Length: 420
Ligand SMILES: [Zn+2]
Image (cartoon, rainbow, N blue to C red; front, side, top):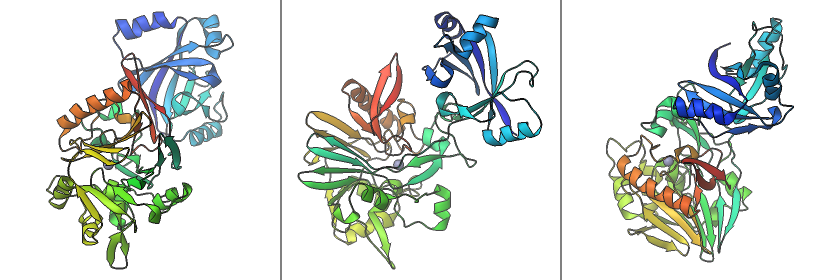
């Protein structure tokens, strides 16, 4: 069994007094508290390097923490060791005759599974084992009425990218609390195009990576197509043939690779009845790649569209269909754009790679992939400020679990209130 120190649990009688010490006097950062209903405690995590302190506050008189404090006063309550597979760890302990409090894992804070070892077995210390939450992707199609528009979040399955590259200058100990990398340092990501329906027709914004991949790249990017765009469109009662417009935020493979497909030796438009709306300057950049972006701009994703005569180029920011407005952000690519969905006095925002996942809602959490990160920062600060202040619904194209939500800010801390 490989185990690392996850945190030390401290039973706290007076949380305000405890925060006055740990937060104010020591100057440590305290995360937003989390209720653990099953334990009747409120847990305040205080990161210290690779581990944390967990301040435990009882929320009911019959809570184990309340009883502990009654008996022994406040102080160290338990230590927690993080394991990869808690079921296997418990089986190993049982086999060795170790006395356990929990024979089976149970739900703990932050979506983890936990189990306690009896203090008598651990020389007077209550030891908790913890298997951190694994990301459980949600790939259902979700529909939302938005004024005169219908917004339908669909997906083209999952893939993986290097965790370091996804978070730029943010060190791994910080980002790995949000998402766990695999043994190749890759983190799970979704590809979530958005279908928009209006009186003018049906549009898809971006369309995932598609299925033109060879075995080598399927392995590198861990494409998981057990659920992909055809399934997702079918879930929503739609089909590829029913798409009338396909709009690109930019032409990277994970956003517009699905615009074309193989048909025998040929590569043809994937949406047979659609016009493809592409910003002319993004097209110029994509068709003249350089060393830094060549791996992202795959010519087969878009050149066949022009040959087929199905591309409508445009150049300026503005309304491409009633209620659908594009705005160039630059940053990620020179011509990267976001899409505003505005109807009935409400605003939703498809942020593409400006805010790829809910872990990127901090201004400085910017991808290492971005060609112009300072441009990303400037635009992101403005866009997130507006989204918070004006309650814009924000779509996260690469988040494996949350398709869209409201960014909320309280005491300078941000979180996402999930809507889709
Ligand atoms: Zn992307």
